[in-house]
Image 1 (tube, helix red, strand yellow):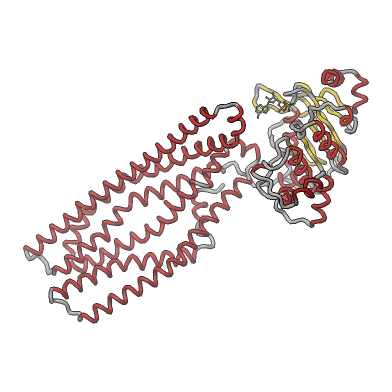
Image 2: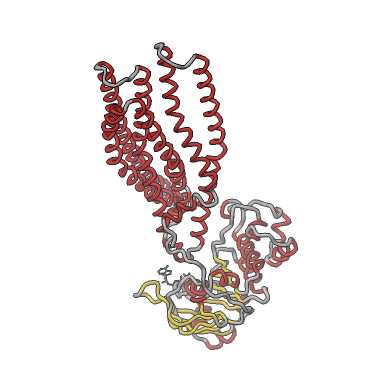
Amino acid sequence: MQTTKDYVKLFFKQNKFVAFVSALVFIILSTTYSIVSWIMQVIFDYMAGNSTYSFESILLMLGGYLFVAASLFMVQRSVYPRFLEKAMNQYKEAVIKKLFKKSYSDFLITNSGTYLSVLTNDCERILETYLKNIFEFIQNIIMVVSSLTLMLYYNSLLTIIAIVIAMIPMVCSLLTARSIATREEQVSKTNESYVSLTKDILNGISVIKSFKVENEAISRYQNKSMQLEHTKKMREQTFTVVSACGTIAYMLTQFGVMVIGAWMIHEHIGTMTAGMILAFINLMNGILQPINALPRIYGGMSGAKKLITKMSDYMSNAKEDTGETIKQPLANIALQDVSYAYDTDHTILKHINLQLQAGKSYAVVGPSGAGKSSLINLLMGYYQNYDGSVHFNNYELKQISKYSLYEKITLMQQSVFIFDASIWDNITLFKQFPDAEVDRVIHLAGLDHLISQKGRDYQCGENGSHLSGGEKQRIAIARSLLKKSEILLVDEATSALDNETSANVTQSILDLQGILRLVVTHRLDASSLKQYDEILVMKDGALIERGNFDTLMDSKEYFYSLYTISK
Ligand SMILES: Nc1ncnc2c1ncn2[C@@H]1O[C@H](COP(=O)(O)OP(=O)(O)OP(=O)(O)O)[C@@H](O)[C@H]1O
């Protein structure tokens, strides 16, 4: 299992050189702060007439300093953003890959708004409060060390006094830093539910409008949005308090050192010049500024680490797909005494015994709640804790790798997901295929007319909003044909379509050759049902009858009454 540390390491993977050069530039730039103080002392002493440097050499020093600083900024411009870019790309890539390692049922446990938040808001916060702060942190440490060194050179007694006084803001920093991390975590949590609700409302906009519940939807949105803005306000308040504490402590310290320095000069303690005192006060900033920034940096970094830990927890049930690969072509699927319960009190599938032969077509019928979709989901490998056995050839479903399973099997549901891309991309799902191969499945799925009318590059819109239900279903058929899966599971795929389109789509599925088809249907239409090799009849989670249309009608049992009532 990957820990927070492992994810943090990803920022630096194959990114160490750029990180090193960036850190080096930050370090050198931070030491130039002491050089500025020293140049200030030289200029001030020159003004007072007790400098050993000529005016020309001071100008040369200034020019040299500006040249070095400008060159360093140029290097920083080139390496620092590159480090951030690669670090974030690697992190996001790892998260999305981990996400796809989750089984579908594990994926569903967490609300999709959470994943959205993890990949958007949290990534942004990690960039701002962790990655950028690493360098600021290094810069601040070096600034403190170089400033202290020069201060000690000027006057060790005043330096010690300054360090003692600087303890005040340091303690302040440490006391307040944790509260920022906590606030950061609260904002992230609230953002998750905000994103979930917003997504829900936008997806359900047609229901909301047609049921005239806009006001209720707006009020739910407002509540959530206010909650989010409230936690953000609290975070901002914490930042302000932390900042104010730092600033007050900072001012106290600076005035303290200034007053003691003035007193020392007045009392002739040590050998300080006025230029040195000026440089000293400036150097104090080199200590106080980092200390002042410490709560923000430390708090931000620990907050970001909490976000990484939270993400890592969400991904903790992602598993490597280590199961077996089905090597031979599919011969059959065999279910032996299979029972399944979503929860211990309700058994949904009861003692199912079933053999399905490669290349044949099966209709699954039964009343609502009979367990038809549950059977399909079981074959998709969504449930691992069923009783009995399910074999694809000789491989037990629980042992098969999902990658191998989904090479063999395709699921077509009522709601086909259509990407906001071209018809072509929706069929190929962004993979490369020979044009002739795609044209063949377009023809088989009955999409010729749509393509000739609109063109293969026609944009389907968000979730296929520019297409009809039948066109979406045909795209789903074309996808599965292109994938060359040996098993097609169809779950009420045509129930949302009008009779004619539904009959056409069903016929396209029935005409497919060499594919095992298991079709859940509510439409008890004799002309279609007669074409299936077998009809499986389910009731209360059990498989109660099976046979072809004529046999089932002749036996005048449950299917017979189901069919007769539907007419
Ligand atoms: N995720 C779930 N958690 C708990 N119970 C569930 C879940 N999904 C389905 N069920 C229950 O399992 C039973 C069978 O549902 P299933 O969807 O398999 O029936 P179905 O025959 O496909 O029904 P329909 O024809 O209405 O789609 C129902 O009682 C349903 O409430």
